[in-house]
Length: 481
Image (cartoon, rainbow, N blue to C red; front, side):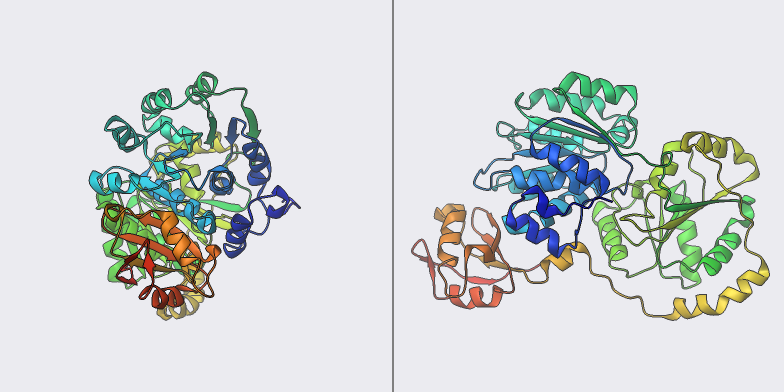
C-alpha cells in the first residue's frame, strides 16, 4: 500500500473534498502508479485485476483534467457491459461532484431519445458500451471534436464479446491528438495490437497479483452430484453464514429455479440475469448494494459492474465454462483490501473445466468436503438468528455523497435563453451562499435542474422564490427523484 495521500498529487481542492467524503484515504497500488502518469497526459496500458481500484485511477485524472467551462464531451470511456457503464458513470460523477463534472452513461436496451437529450446538455464525460456509443456518433448526437481522453476499460472482455472491431471504428473517428488509456485484466494479442496501432509511446503498468486472482480470496472446491447441489448449498450457507453472497449459475433457468427454491425457504434473496429488463436489473443491483437482501443469484451478466466492497462470499453453483469467468466471478469478493471466500461446486464429469481453471490461475483449487451434519447442526442457531434479523441498510457511495445535496427544479431553460452561468451568478450572490455550494446544472429546453451542495438547499429554495434569474422570476421546487 502506498504511503502517498491523494493530496500529494496536487489535485483540485474540489476533487480532494469529494475523495474525503467518499473515504478514499490513500491510493491503491494501481492508483498510485496510474494517476501521476495520466495527469501528465501520457498514453497508458494498464494490466490490473478486477477490484484493484482502477476506475478511480482513471476517474480522478479525468475529473482533474477536463475543463468545466467546455460544453462538449472531453472524455469517452468505453465499457463492455451496461452495468459497468452505469457503475463507472456513478463513480466519475461522485469524484467530480464538487467540480460540477457531468458524466452521462449511454448503452443499449434503453430508449435512444432521453440519451440524445442528455448529450445535448453540457457534458464532460461520456461512458458507454461500444454499440450504443457508435450509434450516437453515426447519428450525430455525440460530438467528438473536443474529445481529449479515451479510456478503454476491461479490454479483454471487449475482445471476448466481439467489440474490438467496433472500438476501432470509434477510435478512427476521434481526434488524433488525445490521451488513450487501456485497462485489462489480461493482455491477449488482439488487445496488444490495438495498443500498438492507436497509442503513442504508451507507458506499461502491470499490477502484480498472485496469479490472476488476489491472495485475499480463500478458494475451495466441493465435488458434488448435480442432484445434491441444492442441499449442499443450504448446508454450506448455514455453516459459512455469509454477510453478503453472490451465487453464480450458468443459465437464466437455473437462476430462476434456485431463486424460487431459496425464496420458498424465506432466504433474503433476489436474482439478476440477462433476460430481465435493464431497469429491473439496476433496481436489484442497487437494492443489493444497500443491503436490502443478503443473497444474489446471478448469471455471468452480473460478474462485471458489481462494485460492492463487502461481498464476503462467492459460490459458483455451476462451474464456469470459460476459465476467464472464474476470475471475474470470484473477483466480486475481497475488494478494497478486504478478504473473501470463493467456493466452487463441480460435478464428477466437470474435472476438465476444473483443470482449465487451475492451469489459468496457476494453482490447484483446495478440495473441501461438503459440511457434515454435525457442523450444520452446530451452526444452525447462529444462522437462524441472523436470518431472522432485520437487514442493516447500508449507504452507498452516491447516497453518502448526496446526503447534503438538494436538487432544485426551475421552470425555465434554453428557450428562455438561460445558461449555467446565469444560475451560478444569481445563486452565488444569495446571502450565505458561494459558488462552492452549487453543484451540477442541467439545462433543458424548458426546465433546469441545479444541485445545491453542503446542506444549503432549503436556504436557496426559499430565497429563489423571490429572486429573478436574468430578469425572469422562475417557479422553483425540490425536483422529483
